Image 1 (cartoon, rainbow, N blue to C red):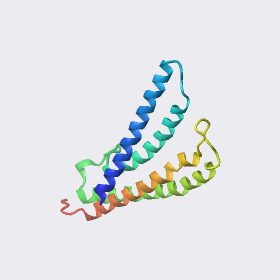
Image 2: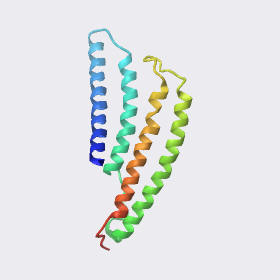
Image 3: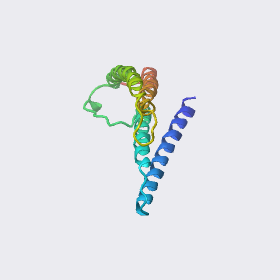
Image 4: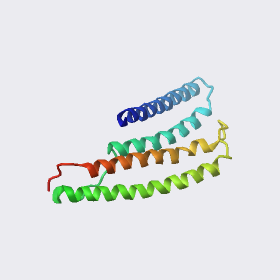
Length: 154
């Protein structure tokens, strides 16, 4: 089930990146022919915000974020695993704050419309709590993986 869900998230990320790229090409082309469009720039910016929030969640699950490893192999794996669990619990606290205040931002910005596309800014800022909920799910899965980890040698 998780693999299918991850594949769906990857499809959304690839789609967003492809649309952003096509909009950039469209904007360059229309400037080149002397008929510049203003809406692709705003659309690219909004889609990029969604791309970053969903991509951050995906990277969290795939453990692709930058990690500073100052402990390394100097401590037993069990200690490293406990530290990893504590780090993930700390991430959960941050994500909880992000979800709570993300929905508040959506509520406040939903009455504002974008200058060019005239869409509710609530749709743009909805990326914060949606991305954070996805991060929450992936962090819980990471903690479960750490707790279930078998055959840990000291």
